[in-house]
Each structure stands twice: as C-alpha cells, then as structure tokens.
Image (cartoon, rainbow, N blue to C red; front, top):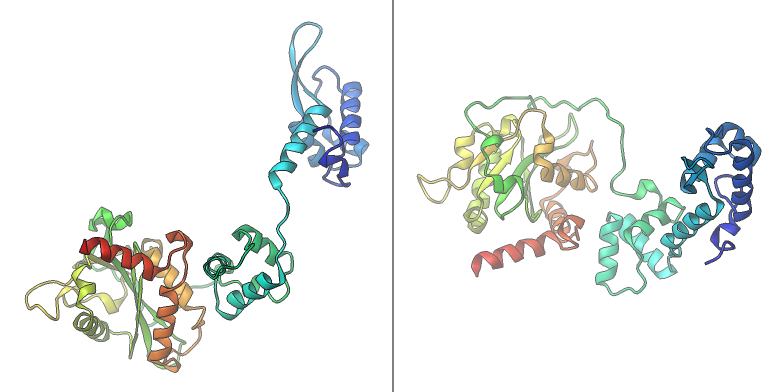
Length: 358
C-alpha cells in the first residue's frame, strides 16, 4: 500500500495528508535538526494545525536516528507517519449503515419495549433479521441522530448525583443480631453457584399509598421475583415470603442465602429465615450488607433500575395492579442480558435447575 492511500483524502484540522507529513518532516529537519527539542506550538502555526495535533502526529511518526557521531536521537519520518495512518485506517473498517427494516425494529424495541441497545440487538438476531450491526454501531447510530431515537430514549442515562431521597422507615440501622455479609459463603460473592439471592424493596411517591414492591434477585442467573406489598413493614415482608414458600417451595429448597440492606423491614431475621412449611427448620440464611453499601447488592440495584423503566420515581405503586407487576417480572426474566452472554434469566435459571436434577 503506497503513500497515496487513505490519508491522502485527509481533511484539515486533525487529519494529515501525505503531502502534509512530508512538509512537516522537512520543517523539523530544517528548524530542529539532530534531535533538537521541537517547539510544537511553532510547528503547529507553520502547519496550520493545533499544537496537540502536530504533537500527536510526531509521536505516531517517531523513529530513532543516529547523528554523525553515532549518537541516537528521536526524529520524525513522513513515511512512518503514513504507515501508521494506513494501519489505523484498515482497523476501522467500513461504517455499518442501518437498513430501514432494522432501524424501524430497533426503534420499536428501544422506545416501545424499553430495551437497551444490547438487548434490542439480541432480540433482532433471535428473530432472524439479517445484517444486524454490532452493539457499538447501534450506539453510534443513536448518537449520530437516528430518526425516532435519542439518547433520552435509552433506558440508562447518566445522571448527576442529587440529594438522596429519604424515607421515614429507611434509616441506616446496624443489625447487630443478624449475620454480616462478611460471613456469607464465598460462592455467593463470585456468583459461582445457583441459589444465592438478594432482596430489597422499591417504594412509591411520598404522600401516596403505602404500597411498595418486594424484589428478589438470584445473583447467578438474575432471575427476578417481584411481589406487591400493602406496606413496607416487617410483617408484610414475612407474610409475602411465607406465601412464596408455600406456592413455590422449590425456590427455597435451593436458596442457600438471602442478602438484604439494613432497612427496618428486614430486621426480623429470625422470622425471615424460619420455614413456614417445616416447623423448627430454616428456609434460608439471611445476611446483612454494610450500611450505605448498595454496591454489595449490585444485582438488586440493577433490577430496581430496570423496574423504574416501567414505574418511574414519583409514581404511586398502588396504581399498578398485581397483573401489571407480574408482566414486569415476566419481561425482566425474558430480557436477553449481556452479563449472561445473551441468554435470558429464565433460560439461565432453567440450565441451573437441569444441572441440579441431573
């Protein structure tokens, strides 16, 4: 590949043509010969480019030379700079364009069904659409102004840190009677085995109804269970877990641990651990995360963020029926996840159940 390759098409500003590289090479040889320190500000003025641009080009085309006394010094070579530009041009490859069919389906999935670009791509691949671009290209298409979709359409938007919302019952209790997360089995921390769950509550608007959501998330498979509670009390949490055990004993049969924060609704660890079916036995082991350490329950926090796509902060959870809550749970369990290699939580859980049954 000769010097008349991709960079000959270069534009002004940050891009160099081969002719510009030759001129820069000549200027450096005349004004700063034999390793003399280059004044990049002056070089930039002579080249009609910024100091940062010529400095970056100098680094890309840098070579080692010897002077008449056999001493090594750093120099610039137009040939080396061009070879570097050609190599970078080859790495980029052709820019992927979205067909009308893919663009329309992508918009429907992101805007209409609240999917992330990764999940939307996974759905399109499963549906057999041809020519679906990579996730990075989809993000680029959104950033470039894809009709019908803006960055605000994406489910995850970076937000500044605001003042933490307060809740009358959400105090930073330190549960000295319960087991600390530091004592939780290491398999739970590394997501190495099925059966380690996290539990949390999601509240509605201040001044609204007392309804809230109880959210359970299995750490390995991201399987979700969402239960609407009449209020955010220890009594309601324990009743919900008792009903869940009676209806789905198989879940607690494999539940090795349950991790929560220090919210007052979880402080009755004895009743949460006690089985509602088998008197005198435990259905799980409850562990408390450290105060103000939401990262220790990352699966729960991510699940709550997904729930907020459907129930934004400030909404009254009492306005959502049990059928609607179940629909959100089903949607989450059938969402293709990047963390699971494109599998859904339901598929990942079924794999683990099959392994346990084998």
